[in-house]
Length: 564
Ligand code: UDP
Image (tube, rainbow, N blue to C red; front, side):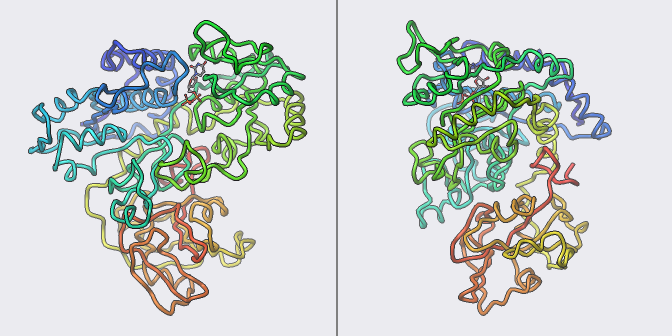
């Protein structure tokens, strides 16, 4: 069946259900953004030349909102608890619905069992028949519940599952045996999925797929009126929970010398002691009212927590400059409680690395808060700067629809992967634009790309060698490309090594998330034995990695130029 774009969201709103604050929050958001989604659907339909798209049967099981997982979120919705997840789930549901798929929504184990056709009851009751869905979107809680209630059949059907996973899961943590043997075991990982089945909130780990969410887009008239009505000396603090303000008096004092400071901190009866008296605290605001506040403000300022939420994008989209602390050393699962036990080795360089790396000045300023002079100078500069509202395409409704559409039509983890094809790489830019990178080699791909079913198309592949200690994420980035894990299987062979003119005394085939790679000093080359361990994120001081990079669309890093 063909999927037809939908613009009337009333059926979706009914499907979401009622009775919990989390559901009301999501429904308010869906309603508020309905017209934006409709315009986006119309535009994307034209962009895709009204192409035929297959309608998929999709189940969305929101594990963290089920009573069975304890549902710790719903009671916090009105108290400043994490709303980012709720924002993202609302947008995922809307995107799938607007794209015209056949959608079922489950928010309890009972509903899950009903949709899967598993008889209710305790213990694992394997689902015997075929899976009644093409795709299941869930989270780690939901995955656990499916394991309990689908038993053995989960293994058989897991290629249909997509896991919404805010901060991402790297291959080394995902592979059960490897994680256990090499100290990567966490509370979350070890599901042996293809790492691209994990979908993140920001495009931080190319090993995973970037799902994202949306932020409101402004038209020309709105943009102009916002710019005219900006209050030069008005700042809003990022942090809706009082604890996020703790120990920040010094910065607030400096800021207050120049600006009127506003906050949206949840409180019950009295001002929380962490929030100084000079701060105009509005209490936790409904999303729409927060937008209004951001439209007037010049500065949106972060103090280090929460990490990587939606709010800075909303602020920038409403014409604020986002000021945030640089983390030196970067925060990671090794040195910070929040990331401890999360299945990622990622080093977080600031409160919002996406804002820092993908947006940057003049919309985003990332400074060392330990240096009061630097902090003060940034505040002064912000008051002088004029910026326009800005929203990266990938965070618009159209951008999200485009990306999710591409994933649904092209990502396939169920059929066994084709055997590694022979490599036929040739240098396309000898001494070309990348010669300023002495430590890396870049090759284009002259393979027979059309013969192989592959998405992204193989024509996008650019082969690179990283420096020692550098991951493929960084190596590709340094050439303005992005690491593409789907391509590892094409470059994990001796032909690629010889095309790169790498001299190997020995070639090992091993389960190692650093491989394919080679050690210069020892003349040792390593190829990957386990496809699940292909990792963009992996790095080692002893090895130079062989990296599959690709191009990407401006403002839509998840998709290569020929990916649509
Ligand atoms: N938000 C809100 N009212 C407020 C402050 C924030 O509705 O007073 C919303 C905001 O619009 C954003 C969401 O909360 O979409 C998540 O914000 P944040 O970046 O703080 O991320 P979180 O830590 O909640 O995931």
